Image (cartoon, rainbow over all chains, first blue to last red; front, side, top):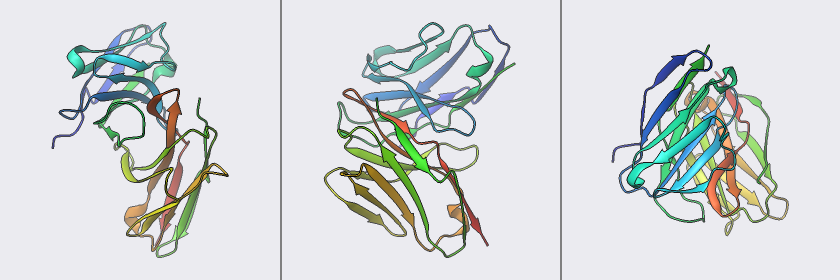
Length: 116
Length: 113
């Protein structure tokens, strides 16, 4: 089966600019996650969707970050305006089950963002 | 929310020896503990996971043990090979009814020839 697709792979912007990332999960996967991975650290959960509803966005900096999942399939993550500390790899993941209980999350290749 | 601590941050072992990475978690309600391997510049990939109803799980050279009382779990790699060199992350559910993951800070495993 096809994996989680993300684009673009790389993005370089100046601080205070805006940027958007796109994710297409594995076909049929109801749950989608966005993680931020700063160099040398583990991924940090930003937001979790179940179909097109938000399950958890407690760690999303809502003053500058926003995310949506149209029709419960593709998702976009936006940063406006970007700060230097937003430089990181943004990983999208999806899993096939609803609810809790722990199900395998499959990660995309990520988008590497550099904010200058 | 969940807090996951991982040790050591760097581990160097001779090829053929065993490697052990340890993690602790804070939320006693957590019930799923995956381990991911991430090679430089690549995506995290699941290598093994364990659920709270078992104490140990093994897959060829890789095993994971779970002690729910002490709230810690460990990754064991035997007969290490050069291709095992990577960063390994443990994780646990973030809690609050959702199953997004809280990750440890990672262990850089170096296999010396």
